[in-house]
Length: 156
Image 1 (cartoon, rainbow, N blue to C red):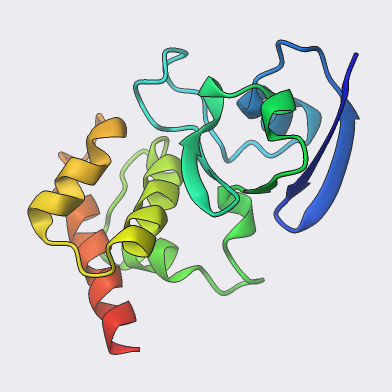
Image 2: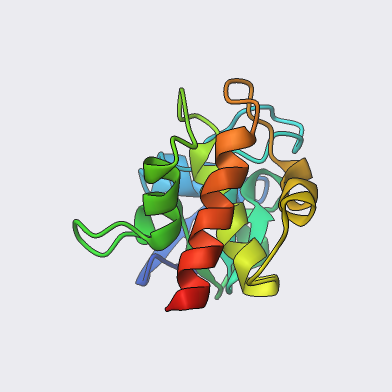
C-alpha cells in the first residue's frame, strides 16, 4: 500500500492507504476528522468540501494519493481555539444552518468564494453555491450569512 503524507489543518499526517482511498475517507476514517461529511456518494451535494492548497474541492472526488504533499484544511481547522472563523460566525449570526449536515461544505465553499470574489452580489453567491445542496434552509439565510461576512471583511 502506498504511503500518503498530507498536512491537514497545519499538522503533517502520514498513513498507508489503499490506492482507492478517497480523500474524504482518509480524513474521516484514518484521521478521525468527521466534520467533512459524505452526503451523496456522487459528488453532487458538496458536504465534503475542503480546501486543498487554499482552493475548495470536493474530497469525495479525489483519491488521497492525489493530494500527497498538499496542505488540506477541513472545517475543524478554521477556528482559532474558541474564536470562530468569520464565515462560521456569520453562519451562526445569520442562522445559516438548520440540521447542519451541509454546513461544513457550505462554509468551506463560501470562504473560497470570498477569496475569488471579495464582494459578491446575491446572484454570484447563489451561482457559486450551485455545487452545494441544502435540504433544510432554502438558502436564504446561507446567502445572507455569506453577504454579511463579505461586508464585514470589506470593512476590516
